[in-house]
Length: 116
Length: 116
Image: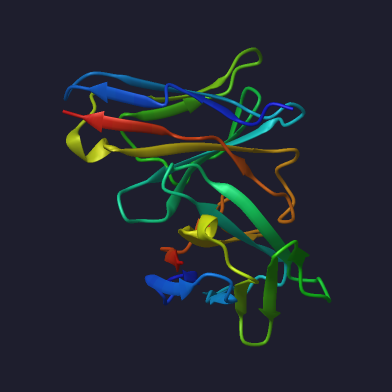
């Protein structure tokens, strides 16, 4: 039973480039969450998506960041014109349903983004 | 105000001893879930244990148990018979049922080191 998959595991970009991070949820899960972890910090919620819908993007920076979860294929977190401050670990999590506070979110291995 | 407070940035414990990692939370929502995750040096986030606000009994999962004191708003993680492999960062997290963001709110974590 495959867990949450993220790729790439490590991504290096130069300032001004675009970063695309991909996440495939666990089988049977249709709810995806993205989090960012800065060095020595806990995870910070960014966005919650269901297939073809953004449900809650209250944690997303207003500019340069976007997320999607298409009908087919993985969820994508896109960061345009990256800056050094975007360097962080980005985690994706999935859950079987999204509306219950009882739902456990299972995390992928994360993508470590380094901006040079 | 912080919603999740973990007051122990780091802990050193002798192998085979029991460990208690502190977590206090702040919410006015009557319905919420509390989660503990482990993050080893390899970086992935591993779900350990869940406690719901309406659960009457403390949650247990193998060597992990949760000391849930609702009136004090604390949800401490207890690891019995610690092992070297328990060395990791441990994060307490909460999800409220409504009104706030749909993601988990994490504490800053406790770095646990098990000594032989």
